[in-house]
Image (cartoon, rainbow, N blue to C red; front, side, top):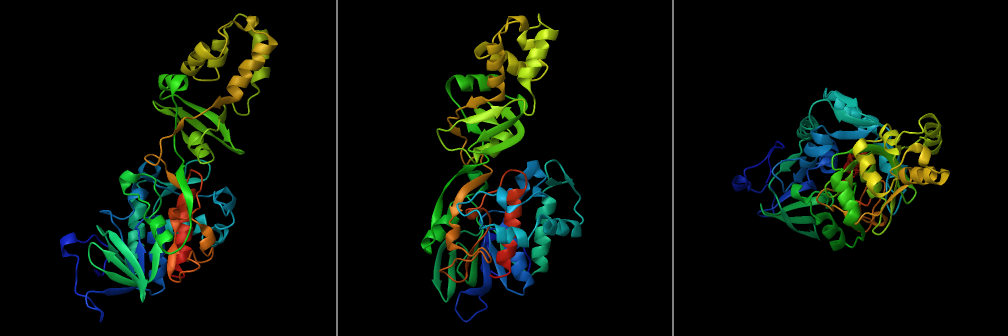
Length: 415
């Protein structure tokens, strides 16, 4: 199974002669399962320490989710990363890793490889070119650290004995340390599975119940009719649910609502709850309507609102929940009602689009069974969990990559 360079192997030619006394067994200091952001980072750091490292990846290439991230430009970190924006049953767990490996540390690596990047908004950093540059950087770093990457490799069983015996479709391998970096359940068409959770349970760790995060909402009935009619319309707003508020755009779709504000709030929403949307954040709508009533008494309410919001939206709302009258026909109570409908528009999602389009998985390997310093399993020496597999989830905008880099980096110092 060994090769000196981190490149794809021909599956038919993958079994090389064993180097150890155990017939058919190749031994590594570290095996990392998963060649995504966290797995690559962990392997690179372990390799830099002189550890003999093998990454096993079931897909045909490393970093597949990195390649599609940020619209293909990879939103690789966020300048405003602080531990308090992450969700977890144990909110303090991520503090150690995120303070030891900061956005500036990853930026230094990007700059070392001369990859041009820019800040888009809200601290989000993207490649100027392509996400392929980030994957290339990581593969170059892995090669420099003598990390071996085995693609097309499916792990079938893991057993604990003298180290970890890992059975694969390409034969067995033994590792002193094992790092699980296979991510969560989001985007199954990219190969996502619950593999990490199965390994955790096998070795006695709990798994916090999972659900899709950063995911569009679906609707039905009258709400869906409205949203379908408005599909493609985008409006800046503040979306709120359970004390979490996000000011970004919402986007109407043929299935419900999406857009950054909605994706953000979806991670804080539970089934049956309402989402409150302020369609004119920071704007005193009642005062504006009263001014317009005095200045343009004969103008239709629709005309006044269409100067503030997309006309298609105003017309659709006018048919269902806004009075279709001239400004001088509106009572103070009417004005108050209009302002309430637009400043606190309550939506009751039917559900979400699920893991198929979710950017992250909430929940995961329970952090109470892991060391926040090493990411190692407390009762199972040599077993580590990193990245999205762990019950740590960040908001949209590069935060989840930063957790992947930080957790991978920290585990890499100890595997």
